[in-house]
Image (cartoon, rainbow, N blue to C red):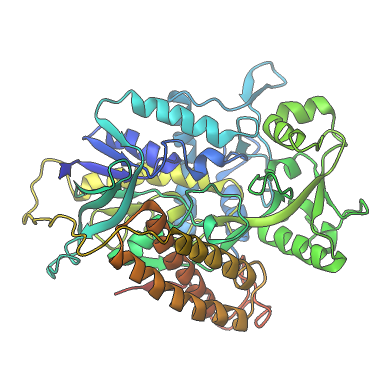
Length: 534
């Protein structure tokens, strides 16, 4: 058993920034199931939305966020996160993060801000079209300079250990984690009273996604099994513009390109977005994704196109160098040709219910970033608010845990954690079955729980997922665990939560659009969909 003052699960922007802050107060373990740079944050292209210009204001950013959230944002949380954003940006700059700059009219350098869908002002800070990579690389470099932070790569967090799971009833608090060391295939125990889940989202629940391979809903599933509340999982954001090409099926075309004038067109070269929204190609993502889905079905074509070729080649190469290179690898020159695009699962707006400090209902357990649900995003995330949330909530979560559980103050009662029991499990030689179940989950979620939904489709998904959960549980208890089996277990749990929440919402709001209830419910007050295991 290994003891730490803080355990951070995940190595994206939220996890790394939480680790840096926590390391000023105690020793820290970062648990990550792949390499330290394998995270959703590292794939982020667009940037960080934050008020840094005199032409912008906190009130405008708050207003844009509330409008995009379709009535389900927690305004107090929105205001806190937006207000504290500039301090976190200053902290990033101190840690060496470089954002693109330009020369102002009076000669001084200022942030080269861009605009994305749903924003009324230019307020998105970026590092060309690879902001996430710049952010995570610099944060990881800062982490590696801290001797009291230990990174455990290729370690898969299996489950949160709580007093309730051990059978105690006086209080429910975290005690540690069971973790699979993938190199040795041994399950080890990490002990801590302070655990931060920063595991990202669940994009791999769907067949087509912009997310990396690691995004299998691990944090949501772990928190659910531990007894945390889960909310609003029906709100899965589909990014409107994923490159449509068989060789690059998960390559995102950033929304910042539309912010810089790129136009969505059909196969005849005609713009179509103004038929769906007066904001055209800069409408919020849910509207654009549904519009593209509608155009594809209307025309019978496999995709639509995003065209920025009317901008100069120099502008395109300086602002979108990575997208230019990636498209050129498949013979698409974006300075001369439109880019074929389709919607793909992108971001999980719901998650583990937390307050604005990232705190869950379980003492000592916090959730930060995409895995959590603070109320910032509501029914639809405003573009580039996600990295902002990671930075602000990770800072607040560490401060919260230090207030509630000061380091050095002994707990009134200590608990003995039993070692991991593998029982009569044997080696699994049926990997093909795991892969088949994985594929089936992703296909049924894409077919039945995608951009447009119906009650009948959701009920079909629920029925099949019930059977799949039984199969996966049988595998879990009868065979030695592997990372593939753990991901499948989390995938089916997260998919079931999405379907459960979607079935409960009998209206169309934000990212949840059902043909059986195509309008918002105007009779009842907008409410979160909250589910809890016990």
